[in-house]
Length: 379
Image 1 (cartoon, helix red, strand yellow):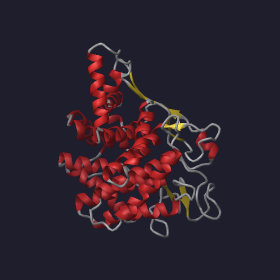
Image 2 (cartoon, rainbow, N blue to C red):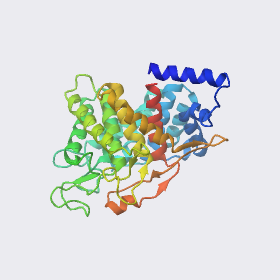
Image 3 (cartoon, one colour):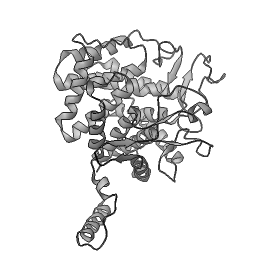
């Protein structure tokens, strides 16, 4: 780090003396990209126009991280405007919470409860916790991805549910919620772990889904964003767990397992990861931005928290540079984040490769804010 600082100082002296030209990218590199992306997105999407789905919730959670660093009240005001428009005084939102995706917003409710003291948000979070009391599970206790998908666990669902459980437990003293945050991650991991590295997208204990292997119940492919969701969920749950939690060791091992896979499968040419990350040479495969953000976020957080060694830092550096290459800021301040896979179900190889690639999709915006704020937090 000291060498980098000396190098930057030397460059600054040479530029100031006129001995070297200023590269065209210098101004963009100095731009606070989190602010730029946050401001551009807020201009394009007034708070009251957002829904309560998980992509919007991901953006709001990323926005709150920008607020935590900058203390710019505009960002928390935006969250409060969203909450006032979407949550009634009794905590209802019109959602029955019959799928894990809808529960990601619970994290935003918890934030708003702390920020505002308005009881509606505590009640909104409590509605999700109460729903889980009767929510269907697999025979070994995993919460189903959707109440209509009997026996199915999707890696995506770990992110939608487990950080909420961990933070709900921390905020309310609900020990069952805290314990379930760990239990769900461990249960999911036990079913989804791919012997070749990383995680299968999904598992069906009935083996009846069209995509399920007749013997294992697993889906046929490792899909990048599903793995990214799982990694981010694990480091976030570890942040919220009590230091003495008996599951910390097992969850840390999951981070290390994923980190090994991330390092092995990183594209050396771009620093990003492919839509089907364990098949980099597959014709038609492409590097996807949101999962690359989530993989890099997980690795950086893992190093920061001591779960991973500094030997992973080059993977983080290359990953961040690769994601950064997909982010641009126009003269008027509008930002673009490109090559983001849209919402995706479980499918086969051809299905994943053919998924549309969007610009400024909330999956990519939110994941980028998570990553950029994490990189800022470690300097």
